Length: 197
Image (tube, rainbow, N blue to C red; front, side, top):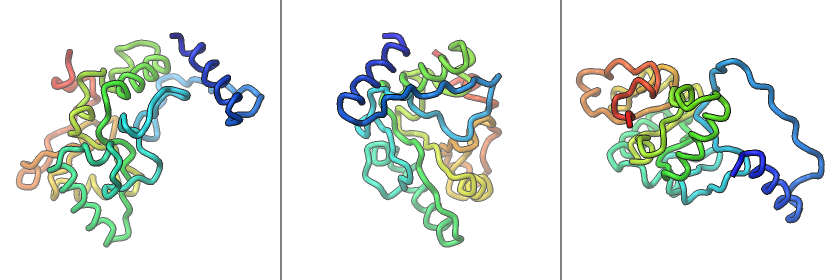
């Protein structure tokens, strides 16, 4: 189903339910290779929900949404320890994304392809479905920027490492980092050998 047709169907359904106004939304202007402010967001109107790993704004490491509780237990434990220590220093950590279903990952990848113009360009920002470490619950996307800055400095003490230069919000667990520090990050997900199909 084309993205345009999907958008029209969603708008019709929202109108029928009284959830939308009758004016057409304005189209965003695409910029050449923009750097996003945070982790990828699902396409507007896409079929998704909490069961697929979508998280509401302001989600913490203590919430019981599937996107949080399906994160690898060891990663979640270390993230909770870091969150407690960050909070004691006045820094709040929010989970923007954690575990994701393959369906949710596919929606994010499709949106990135539409925005970036090709699968190769999209793969520099969003892992292809079936390869994402989010699907295994082995990664979290965190915010806001104050939390990302705090974790960039203190994350290795908990084994929490930034994995991609272009995604500073993306953290994974590397227990060796506590003793040896985090390994150098990949430029972007397309350079990560774990994500190659």
